[in-house]
Amino acid sequence: MTFWAWAGRHGTAVKFGSILAAVLLLAGGLVLGMSQASGNPAPVEELGTTPPASLAKQTDHYIVGTIALVLPARREAIVRRRNGQLVQVSFDTSTVVRRDRASQAQTALRRGTRVIVLGEPMNGRLHAQVVTITGQAPVRPAAPARPVGGGGADATKPTAVP
Amino acid sequence: MNTEDQRDAIDRLYERLAPVEPPVDFVARVMTRASQGEVAHWAGWQRVLFGCGYVAALVVLAVLAFLTGLAFERSGLRDLLALAIHDFSAVSESPSVYVAAVRDAVPWLHLLAIVGDLALLALATRLVLKVSAPESSGATAPSG
Image 1 (cartoon, helix red, strand yellow):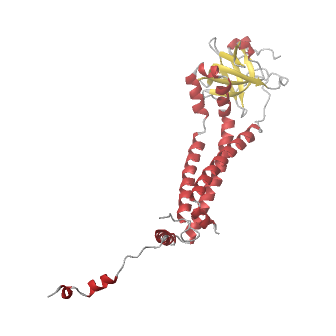
Image 2 (cartoon, chains in turn yellow, red):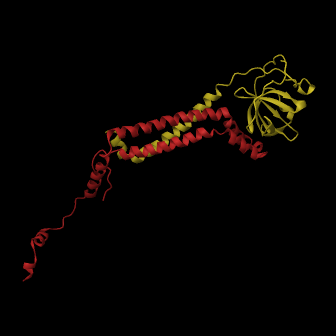
Image 3 (tube, helix red, strand yellow):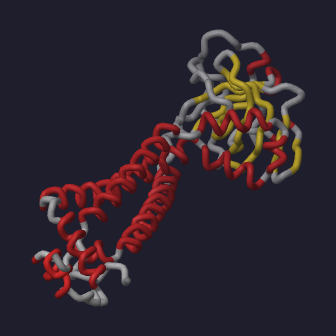
């Protein structure tokens, strides 16, 4: 029996088989792709203790990444995206910080904290409305401070990293 | 002129005809013949073309699904969806921002390509079924 003869006799089976194959390929491909991407993080360059001179411009309403630097006096933080880009995030008193389904103080945001930040992009930075802490990355020793144009005031001094 | 004179040869032939009971599978045979005649119009290269199109649509679907999975993970969409599941309060704090974030994170081009490929797969399946021939006469024909 040829394939064509079989397909001609079992039209319903061909239809449902095609649907099943499409669903399996779609689900399998998605899972494989996601596991592949999560297994290959971007190389991380140590930030040091001062804000970097160049930051990526934020245009999206969210960031998924790790806090690289916290500047509490300026109510700002530098967050490293998964692709290695550094983005500036600003806070205010209305910014909600959550962890394990409970509200936290903003002091819970420290270097190495994995976060999902939701907010509004403004002037190339993200103004955070909700910051959800999802975990803690292993903290590496901070690299020596690098000279950066501008800044230098007390406001730019980072917090002590525990 | 009597009645016998008015009847011609055709009428006399009709008188010899008697109603005949058709075979039980008469309709099935006719339908199968008709179907085979339709299939005969499809050339072999067309069958191969449709079959290759069907297989290619499946392969492309697998590749697109893999690329979409990569995009889901890299854009953080999976984390955003997990956030809504694990801590809905974080979403309800500012739902409009969350919706905007999901909208930003969705790889629309990938999804569009998948929808297009699914449409091609449906078309290829339809064509494959159209060019497929029944194995033997009467095997697939409806009874009655």
